[in-house]
Length: 247
Image (cartoon, rainbow, N blue to C red; front, side, top):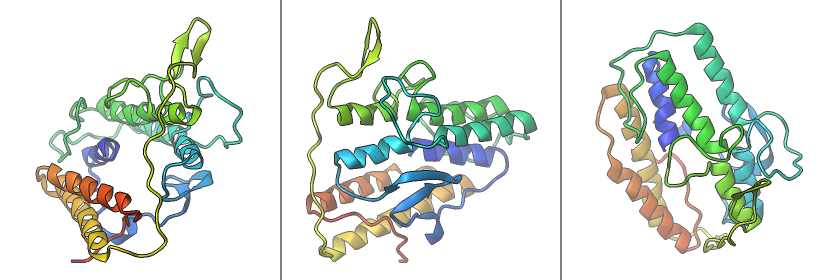
């Protein structure tokens, strides 16, 4: 959510308008391509956590540079990091006018976007919180952990904590615990709960777009509502449906 908010804030700062409150914004799973044309060799689908699914998560966050403690990978060179780098380079070359009073969604530890440098800093944060820094798995700001997303997923995948040793970083720390997993049933059960979840997703998209278009305050309660409904569905063995639901 922080990264979505930062990307939307950068867009409004240069006079754009995020359009997320619509059916076409929500992806249809499985995906073979991320926004920006970043191809994925492993299809992205909504599934219970597994080692195969962790490999998908790591693919999404795969660093543009060789990751630390890397194992051989067949992934192609196109990454989310390279996608954001292209945007950053465009900002630095074009130096677009920044609207200092643009509507925005507040983000913890993020400064208001008042200059081009502020905009590129926001984009760098999105990138590095996902893949880490060039010579370190650390991220520049904290989201509850000192490690970037790629390395958090890989700690679970390798079943060991990533630690710095005299010879460099290695997955040789304490053993990690695989999270509790609930398998999804193929039967379409709990129709009312599924409907409530879809309505909550739709409501959140509408409210977020209004933050950028009308300057309305972010309704945090809607995010917690989605979290609660989603967890309840998963515990019941039902895959949450991220679909647009007309009221």
